[in-house]
Image (tube, rainbow, N blue to C red; front, side, top):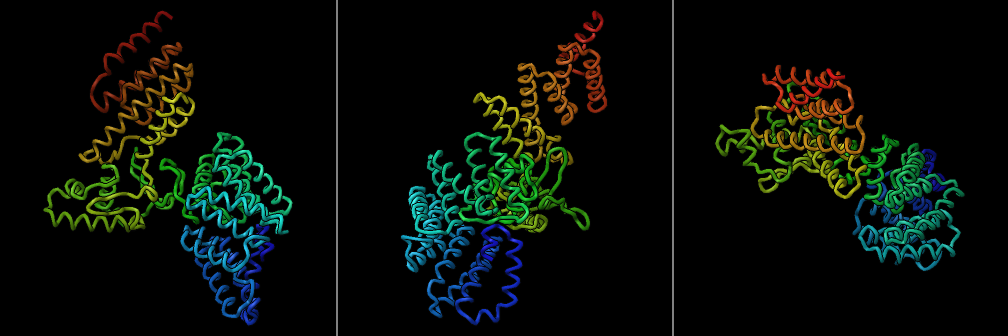
Length: 528
């Protein structure tokens, strides 16, 4: 089992688990074998991400070893216990077990020292003590000369690479990472190679080497997807969240990346990632849609009107610290205080049932908040992305500004909650988002024109019209572009579409500015 796990062959290890369990009653009569069986089961369970079961197996191994006095059997089980506790984020439990490891065996030489110092480095790193993490990681690598445990040599070198890189010692970090990768390939250990390639991808992204990073990420995820690796020594949740987000953005092993996120309950590195497997997704632009675990929520009968109205109002009011008094005032204006509060409490209870989580909507001290780690809202992501695009443009990174703005504008599929057009509480956000959308489309199109990118500018104006068919400024932009390029028939066609839309929908003619553009198109056409 250990051989297959170290190679990363989880499927073969699973067969070994089945065999061990089938013979467990006979084997457990020997305390030496019993501690070993529980230890290897813990190792397997940790590797598969079943952390609670792994800790139970660790405790079973320790109990037998200590009750029978089996020498040397507690140390490796404690090591798996530390790995499991760190994987769960239980730093206090990991620290307790590390102290037990130090008391159980000599940690100044051999495998015991390498194992202990590698785990201690991981623990210190997760606590944010980089100096102590580096001290332990360097010690682990120095001790590899006293052991022939080659796999562990690869593990501790990869750990040292991560610590050195975090310290800013990037060149030497890559050197020891290359040593770890060479060990992985010599041993034929796919799980260690997977880990090295993921770390390499994170290094490359941090240094702006995106092409190399995507290549390493693609190889790393390809190595892990078949066996669905979700646990290894020195697993850093923030690093894996960053890499999974990059994978989703680039379309690399999407199913596997989402599997990692869900099994390890990774938190999104930012709130703008639409393709993150959010427990709850709320779409409000162009139409209203509610998704749970990426699937539309189906209602057996009619959709619950008041709970959904409550959700929409929470979004409209910003989603953070929204006063219950404000919500009851707009949703139950005809009810007195007590009755309105009861109606609110009932609607909130039903909303949580719809979302499948009490944690998604937090009520604290009379204020309501949508948990940003559980709920994604297109309107909020739209505004944040546009803010990032503007920051990039002001910093002189025009290309990045275009890319981020393009992502943002793609989210704006129409006005905010169009089916709730008569609700006064929805109007302020609707008008703000529409104004922001128009301003950025116009700004982006003008920047594209200034850069000589006429087709892109035309596409930008067309996208604006698609999302807001009555926005006269977008038609004017189209007409101006067509006039400048001599595409007069297309410019006149744009004018006719605008005149028809305004007449049918609003009963008004085009503005004087639009008519002036129309005359310019006509005059140019006549003289042509």
